[in-house]
Image (spheres, rainbow, N blue to C red):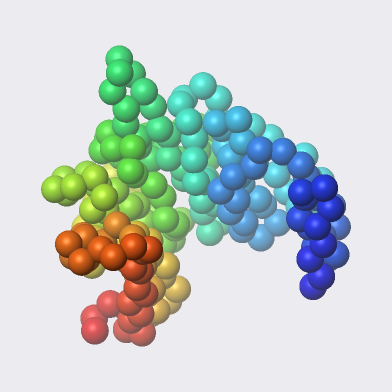
Length: 195
C-alpha cells in the first residue's frame, strides 16, 4: 500500500474513493461504516458511499460501534443542560433509539460489542477520580450490568479468549513519579482474564 500526501490530504493508492470532511470515530462491520460528523452518527455502505444520518439533536454523538449482526449501533451522547454536562450510551436499531445507561458521565463510551445483546462500556461512574475509568458489560435488552474486575483502564479489546487491556497516561499509580511524557502499558491475557 502506498501512502501519498497532496494538499494536506492523506490517502492510499488502494482506496477506491475517499471523502473529505469532518469525520471522526469510524467503525466498520462487513460493508457498513459508522462514523461521527457534525455531532451526529452517520451510517453508510461501502457499495454506495452515501451517508445517512442516524442521530439528530440528541447532543454530541461520539464513538459509534456497529453490532455483530449489523442491525444496531451503540454510541455515546454527550449533553450539556443547565450548565451541567454528562454522557450516556444509546442504541439505535430497527427504527428506534433506546437509552442504555444512566451514568451521566462525560467520560462514558462504548468500547465494542460482545454479542448482539451485550456491549462493553468504559466509564468513570462511581470511581473516586474522573480519570479512573472502569469497564462494564451491559445487556442491552434488560439493562443488567456487570462490572469487569480489571480495575482502572484506558481501553480494552476482547477477541475470543484473548483480552488486551490498555492502561495509559491516566493510570493513577504513577502520578507521583511523573517525570514528563506519558506511561502506558498493555496487559494481555490468553484465558479470558483468569491469569
